[in-house]
Image 1 (cartoon, rainbow, N blue to C red):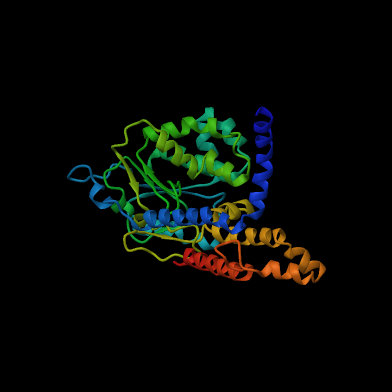
Image 2 (image 1 turned 90 degrees about the horizontal axis):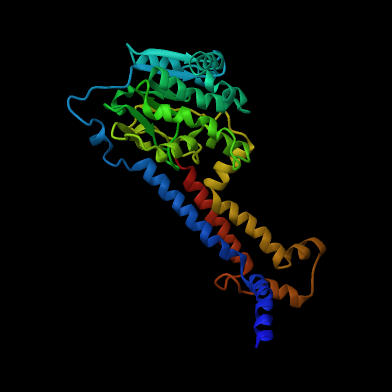
Amino acid sequence: YGKRRKSQWKDKPVRACEALKKCDVAYILLPVVFIQLFLFYLEFNGGLQTGGFKKNLCSSQPCTQRIPTIIHQTYKTEDIPPNWESTPKAWKKHHPGWTYMFWTDERNRKLIQDHYEWFLPTYDGYPYGIQRSDAARYFILHKYGGVYADLDIQPLRSVSEILGDAELVLPQTPNLGLTNAFMASVNGSDFMAHIISILPEHANKWYQIVRHWHIMTSAGPTFLWSQYERWTGDKSRSLIVPAAFWGKCSICKSRCKDLETSPLHHLMGNSWFAVDSFIFNYILMCNPVPLAVGLLFLIDVYKTGRFNHWVYGARSSGENKKMVAPGGFLGFSFVTKWIAFFCFGAVLYYLKQRP
């Protein structure tokens, strides 16, 4: 009996491999499709649902803006790229009486050196300039308070309408989580104090393997989102702005239309993106189904022997007949199945690109 039981366990990996070989790889697409639909749901919720935001703008009446009337923007030098050149003028035009402060890399470092010297080794140790830019905006808001906005964000009217009487304003993205592209706070904010105190611990983590993920989780949007979720301070004076109210559209779209609910207009941004950012955002996050269709097609071609057939020429008539016979995924032939999948992937890609 013991020998028979041992033999059964020994044969299980073999039987599993045989079952895997017989299984059509197209079935792997099913969980990927569910992931894609879930991403659609997140985008719909973040981009369209408002969650009664306007009703929660002010916690009391009369509604008095607590956030200082200061606008902060930053770039490497004072030579702003042509596509963002008009941004500072737009902010000054729609916010008369507000103070406008422009921060270069040199000014950012001086702020750290003069007021937060304990952070200087971490600041100088960041391998990427965008990490220093991400970190500096938290220190700027902690020191001065006000509104921070990336240079690819332009106002259509005053942003006071989405600040209410909150002491901390953070925006959602239509994809997933929060972002640091647009933020506002009072000076000395408890949350900003928490953020800057925890930055050194996240400068280099074991999971920050690739450049994009390192940037996002060390000081970028993913870091901000995770820290806000973990923060145990008083959130009653915080305001989370839905994507529909600050005009942010999905990173998956090549173009976006302005929303009437938003006082902001978005230009082309993401200047720090590299190849790994493209793979992470536009392929893995935005288009997992088209990617899976392409990869699984190649696997299926090799698995069914079509690769050798196409490369080395005709096979026996019996083998050719076996290759095109219906079977596998819901009884469809190889050609019919993959034509349908490629069409399905193209439709999903088109839907993700619509403004």
